[in-house]
Image 1 (cartoon, rainbow, N blue to C red):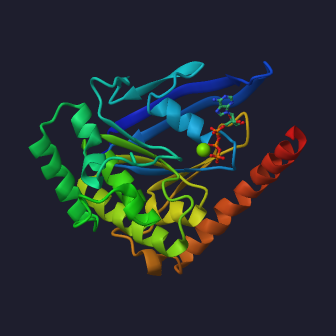
Image 2 (image 1 turned 180 degrees about the vertical axis):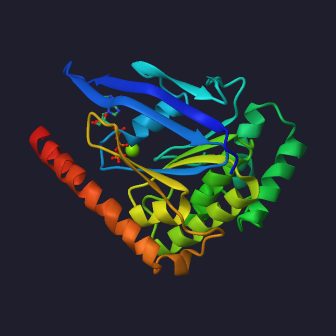
Length: 268
Ligand SMILES: Nc1ncnc2c1ncn2[C@@H]1O[C@H](COP(=O)(O)OP(=O)(O)OP(=O)(O)O)[C@@H](O)[C@H]1O
Ligand SMILES: [Mg+2]
């Protein structure tokens, strides 16, 4: 990992206005720096504002207050290559898998032959060879997630934002995909900002973990993950360092989860 700061969130605050006119204070004065090539995970209770922060850092929405810098400059889609995988991302049902993977390249005006070459290469590295001409409904849930991930990688983004990309998958498929993400990242060293509810997943993947407080959310704690790389997904889980860190993060997050539950119960 280089020591340059790739991404910086400066004094980010954000309010939403709900339909009944009430203001929801989602984020409060968040300051965050991500180094070039760093794998940063963000955890926090449901509804605390993780997706909001990701939307802001990836330029999808403007914050009520604050600024996002990429390599020291204001984030710009013409200057910076940003990849984004949302919580509910899906493939386009009427497009073959290869054309789904290549969609970002198509938007950038890359010729069909070249975009298919890039897509084929990515499909091969992620075990999707042979499925180029299939349609999304012909793939398993795990394969579709894989296609969504390589679709985001196809344009070779400097920063990739991932919002719970494996949320609803079973634990076995999740582990296989985590392993693949790590392999791809270790090869390419893009900067990754990764949201997850799963503390073990955050420890397995990340260099550093940020824990967000409940609303109005800010950074409650920060943890370095000092497990050696390349990581061994199966073995690392049993190491003393892993277990201690997991316990420590869980203790911190417990209060925030309780606050979130109480708030949800009062709002229905
Ligand atoms: N477009 C919107 N309009 C109004 N309120 C919103 C909007 N998007 C999010 N919110 C509110 O802002 C708060 C933060 O939402 P956000 O989706 O960022 O949380 P989250 O941490 O990603 O939750 P989860 O873990 O469940 O995905 C919530 O109270 C949510 O209801
Ligand atoms: Mg979310």
